[in-house]
Length: 264
Image (cartoon, rainbow, N blue to C red; front, side, top):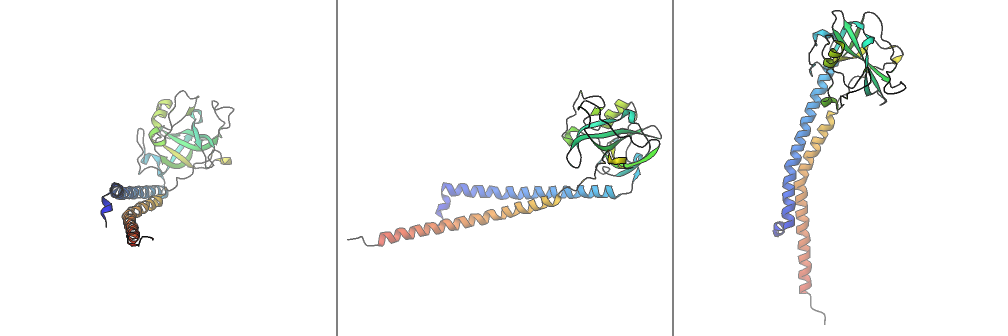
């Protein structure tokens, strides 16, 4: 009754089913790993944002690479802004996805070291992309700034190409090593996204805190793949039983036709 399973069609169908089951199980395991990674990353970000602010030089120094554990940690610094060496970072968007610039201003600490401060987003309000935009001035004199510590930007992490030959005082990526060469100064590794003091007139627009990665979505995908894996053998059995039923019905019809008396 099940000899049809040895047919070419059913052999191929069975092999495909046997291949799909472990593939779907592995995809579910991969999604679960992604869920665990994102959950851990969200916890790191949450812990960093909720921790008390510390002096910036406790976490970074010239040549230092900001680690994952240090990223987003709130830090403070005392010094003054150096707007003469201020630059803008091209092709950055605000919360409304408008394209403009990020304002990167050197912040000179009391000991002469420099901290790079991303003061926020401004619109591209110049007559052209080659012209340096108008930037509201930061507070003058010695002040205390607070911000979230960030690692140097790279093309690999951001997908942004570090183009050459840009207009004067315009850059593509925030990199403390490159800025140290430009400024001929000791620049602390990484930079901070300023959170206070808030600018007058809301420009530059301060960068918002990072959002949580959607770890729950990966968890749902993992369950989905495992349900698919469980559904494959069930579906195979249903198809086999249907095929068997159809073949038995066809055989019954053929037997009936053979036993019926021929018409006179």
